[in-house]
Length: 164
Image 1 (cartoon, rainbow, N blue to C red):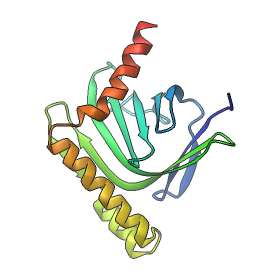
Image 2: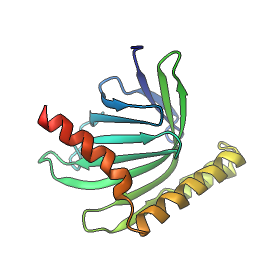
Image 3: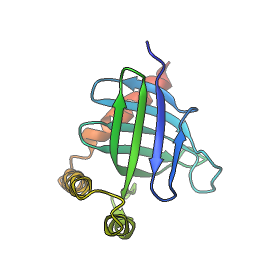
Image 4: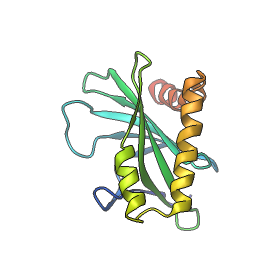
């Protein structure tokens, strides 16, 4: 099996970071599930699991604090660039984030940053439109009570890790 290298690319700040310490729990043609610790120590969150849904352009993360209590589900709208020949998986953060708290409260973040990137032509019009469609699709899934269809992949991977 080819070595898999994961990268997170961001516009704000402009950076690309290799996620070399993330543990790959599962990988298929359509998705990737990882387990990770925060890159920089934080008081509010400590670690989590993430599922990257390639076809949906969405990364869903289950985020825990240091006491291993669920803080929230964090959903990033992303643009995946996958090169199976080289094993390079780059996920560009398209700035729009959706948080789902344990009590069910939903919060959409960073639309102002997204608008700024569009205004400055940092994101192409086509990619901006796609990001909005991905956001709409994800919000419809959440509001219809079907977010568990995405969360299930993380929870199944989490159970598999706990049992082994």
